[in-house]
Length: 256
Image (cartoon, rainbow, N blue to C red):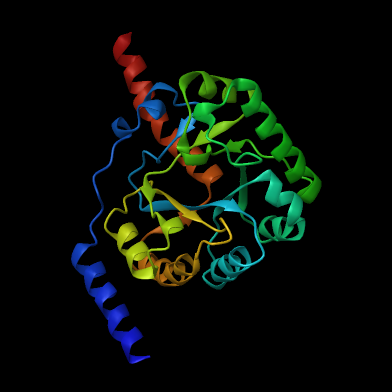
């Protein structure tokens, strides 16, 4: 217990000494700049608002633990679900929705879409959407590509299918199992208004995501104490596009 106390104290020292919002710009994400109505990697907002997102679930181990922590801290997040796992764990999928979280489509089998054609992408998305509907009675317009791999043609096709593509601006790399300290440090050293944080709530059976669960329980209250609020991806999308309206109007006015 004492070892744990000193480790956490070290994290808190790092937190308070390095906790300053990182300058961030959509210029880092050319697809968001080129396709603002189809892609979002971060919210272009000034307020301390961030979104927690979880990929590759659901499962029966880490997903319920993460849901318990989110409930404990009264935070809503977004879960990008694999169709094959929704089919296997429909009850966990229903709990995600019943707990008030947003859900997104993360393909059926988790292929690298950069190596796939449009027909395979459509199949992956449609099959997953069908499983989500069977489990929850809902569909989703939010899509995250495995590995974030998308090309321009696929992005345009997402639009035709009625989906919005979602990336991230902070990658915790928690799937590598670095432990809660490393995950916490990665977030606090890179956090910024409008951040979309990538984490995982399931994975290969050999992966240890216990660090994600432990880090989440530490991160949420720390971030809250520094004024950050948590939103879902649908909320972040709305806030981002609302913030763009005044600048767009000003641009249009200057052209007249």
